Image (cartoon, rainbow, N blue to C red; front, side, top):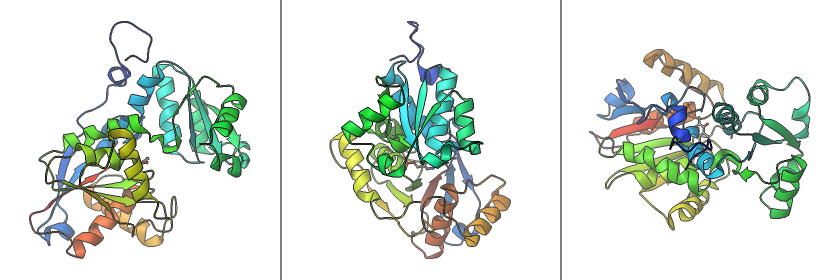
Length: 302
Ligand SMILES: *Cc1c(COP(=O)(O)O)cnc(C)c1O
């Protein structure tokens, strides 16, 4: 499949020149070492400089399915998914339309995240929250696409999670076969976890750490696995204790934790997802959740 319309067999994945498989690095951290546990970082943040982390794995199969049609998708004020879609549109030369939750966000100047989307050529269409909530109803979706001038667009759901995206994330698990006992990842929609768990080998487990509140994620990840693979796949579970109040919510303790992790390991820690994941893993290590010798891989998604 080609996103460029060329007939030379060049796929969007080739053009984007991803760094795959992403690096896997072991780090020395006394909070894990004390328990005899090894900590590895799966650096999905290094896959592509502009397609934030796991969004590369989710987007590429959808871009190929869109085959050059405009891609219409959805997101909130600071959506990494909207940013990644807009960047992919610019890099690969296909039109993008972003339906944004909240009419008030149309006020200029746009926030930096939405400004980046428009700079990348994404057309933004702002809608009120009650319409946004109903965006998966076929009539509402059709009206939104029409109003955004993108009736024939290829539609990617909020957060980029659909069957194609989940199948794309299976490669994350496959890259980790035989290299870790437990693979942990921060979850928004659960699509990346759903694919990751399906790609792991026998005896490996996946752990999802939701950054949103509400307890809906287990059902959602299972629904996505059923859509992508016909049923539940792999050995996965969730730990719902580390959302810190919900998406984009934070706490002084979390920020201190992230800064300390940055000092210890000389890397930036993204605050909306990755900080909560790492905080949860340190807490689990401290609780003695894992047997000595366990290799824990944390997926660094941004
Ligand atoms: C989108 C995102 C996730 C979560 O991915 P889902 O598939 O929606 O669960 C995790 N980390 C970062 C940095 C993200 O942008």
